[in-house]
View 1 (spheres, rainbow, N blue to C red):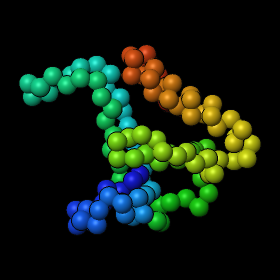
View 2 (cartoon, one colour; view 1 turned 180 degrees about the vertical axis):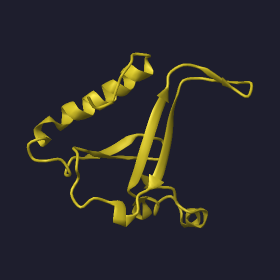
View 3 (cartoon, rainbow, N blue to C red; view 1 turned 120 degrees about the vertical axis):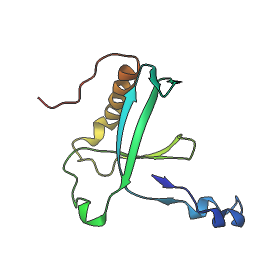
View 4 (tube, one colour; view 1 turned 60 degrees about the vertical axis):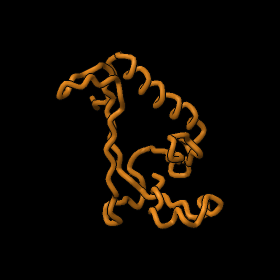
Length: 120
């Protein structure tokens, strides 16, 4: 994930901002809340709830145990790059389909369709 710059680095100006961008490996968990819920009198609409934590170096696997891809996003959430280098060579030809399926599953869940990620 892109790390937000510290307040004192804002003084350097916008021109130098891209040169100081820092990404950090994070473990992210997300759940879609497709229906409105009430909490303490507030009516909350559909949303995606995300929790992220820094992954300590000792917990980072040397070789990925599952197929994965990495996206980079700007601070507005726009995907700026997609890295498929951690995928096995046999999987690389289908990476576009993998990304498409992940996005479709998210949208299907967001629209209220039941999507299960449980292993059988």
